[in-house]
Length: 329
Ligand code: ACO
Image 1: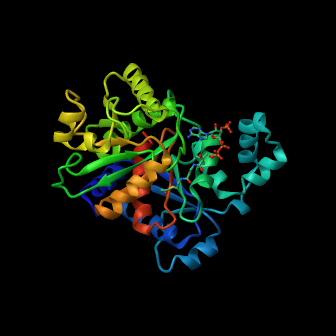
Image 2: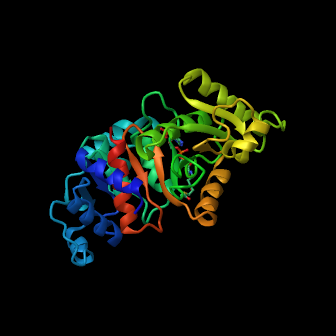
Image 3: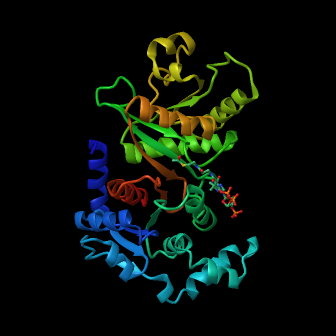
């Protein structure tokens, strides 16, 4: 495990947050809950049937892990809350009563009610299905309009890229085609995650196929408009754009293409112009450069909810639990 993940786990231990795991009957989740509980990374809640969980636990010790069987408890207060929050969006009480029986909704409602500090799911559910209940119920943090995601990319410690080989890429998993406003939100949130979880000082590059006007296109205009928004709202942030990836990363190229830029040549937070670029970009660096890709880390929610990859291991789940704890504030 990387030093970064070790440090994230150590920080989480001090916080003693409660994290609900909605996919409580999934063996990797059960193993992760047992391990995270044993290590003291968080207080864990598994949603599921206790007999099924015990059978699938295969010796994993679940002492201290709370199990909630949604089918056996009074879910009416959760249904009422869901109805109140969503009645203007066409929710009626009967539909709310059925919807809360979906663990992804129930978990998010637990967070909303303050019974848990954050939720983790996605080992057996698609990203959209994990995020939609949270988008509808948890909503965004104050001052942020867009929920987005990033990956912490860990290269070799001696890499010439990133801060000690650590970089942050956003958005790689949530917003298919962000506009300038959303792109600005993604950049600001990714910079915050870079500081809070990756432990680096963010130097943010808004990536494009153009550097400083070398190409004219409406896709480039979207990126330069995002830069203007960030500069106005967050003058404290080290950010520049539009930059091609080489101008963002390589000092000699930066000198030629973006002379005088504080960020070009030294960027450690890369903001991709859309989800096609972001998702492809992080996977290329992961596969071709052998980087460890930690995430997706969701950012911008009022209370943290994180989505797992369906290919995740139980170790990955423990890491996401720890990162979620760090986002609880
Ligand atoms: N930030 C804030 N609010 C949002 C966002 C956002 N990014 N997206 C949607 N919302 C809000 C909407 O305004 C709406 O609010 P309301 O119902 O209170 O009015 C609510 O969330 C639901 O919106 P929908 O439009 O119904 O949700 P949608 O079906 O578009 O789902 C989602 C949103 C899940 C994020 C969608 O954009 C999506 O599926 N994104 C791609 C996910 C994906 O497949 N990623 C790639 C795989 S992940 C990987 O490879 C690691």
